[in-house]
Structures are given as C-alpha cells and as structure tokens.
Image (cartoon, rainbow, N blue to C red; front, side, top):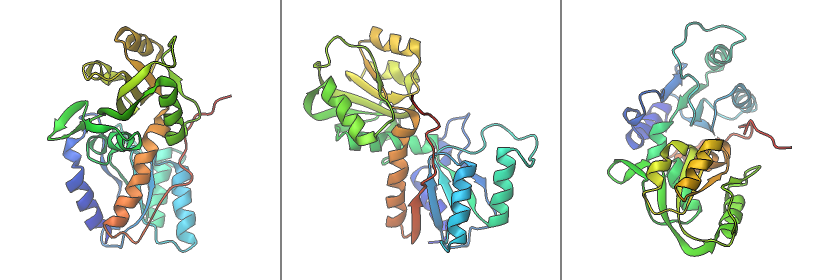
Length: 266
C-alpha cells in the first residue's frame, strides 16, 4: 500500500472534515512521498525526538517515510520557518530525509477504534455509546457498563494495570469500597465534557488534564474524576493504529519508542 492509498483510507475512516474549527488535522509536512510504499512510524506527538527516531530507523534500513501522529505539529498559522525553531527544524528534516508528518486529531477522537473507543475496550465497557454524539454511533467520549460491578479501589487498580500511568489522580472519597458499575472515558483533556458525562449515569469519569476547580465541579455533580494523564489515556489508541495499518496492508509500521509523556513525578 502506498502513502496516498493509506491516507485515502484514513480520511474515509476519520474524515478531516469532522475536526473542530480550532484543530489542524491532515498533512503537516508532505515532502513528495505519496507514490511511495508506506512505511509508518506511529506516535502520539510529532516531536524532534520522534523525527530523529524515524531518521535513525531509515538509516538502519527500515523503509520509514511517514510519521503518523495524533497531535498536530502545527496549530497556529506560521509567520516564519526558521532553523532552531521546532517546526522549522521538523520541516527541514522532513524534506531532507523524505519523511512526512500527518496528524489525525479530533477526527480520530470520534471514530470507532479512536482514542475514546480504545479506552472503552480496555475497560471492557458493555453497551458503550458516545458521551457526545457527533455522527451516527460516533462522537466524543464513551460511556458504558463494567462487565461486573466493582469497588472504586478495584477500578483504580484496573486503570493502573491497563494504562500504566506514572500517577493516578482521583476525586477524594471517604469510601474506596464505593461500588462502581457505569464508567465514562475520554482520552486527553476531557474535563470540558463533564456536564455531558453527568447526564449519562456514569459514577466515574476517566480522562486527563483536570484542574483543581474541575475536581470540585466533579464532586458537586456527584461524579468521581479519574485523571490518568494525557499520554496514558491516548497512547493506547496509537498502539492500536499500528495493528489497523497492518490490517490494511502496510508492510512496515511500528509504534514510536521515543514518544514522551513530558511529565515526571517525584
């Protein structure tokens, strides 16, 4: 499968037209590789470290020519492209080494096997539906029932085992033995969806990047917030992309080993 065919498949599955107005999905850098067989390095965030990894792999003989990322490289309109600037250096390295950068962001959040859907699968949520529907059966977040009711303590242990975050932050509770049977999930920064989650009957909400007053809001809405971190809640969907690309006939694809969480806890 060449790069052009792969991107056509991606855009039929997760159309860029579904992205939010502030977003920038699609080609970030396209250095003339559309007719080449696709060799894909998948990552959460397209950083210089990931580009260096792609270049090293290529020099070692891997046919990598595309970095497929969840987060866009470019959000704001560029006023210049200069050496020493992250975007400028990425552009230079991309064109020099023939390695493109493509991003699927808020369009990927909504689809089956997207960021939220993969979290629901990891927790084995039953009868999972979008928290905020945007298309027929698709949308932001997922909410569903656990296979069997469990205590909050058991749910936290399950999330730790499945996502392996460096730290879990959760709403204070007097009883970790509180029984949980319905859970909502949304990878990445999902606190703005809390009012919608509160209408779903979920007792707990797994997401990330929650602030002090958002935990307060969760308490007032009788909703237990569980913040596992941006990286941990979205990285599993990137790993799943590798399998999807293989199923589509991409002969070389792997998950980046230099993708970073950008946070470390003492």
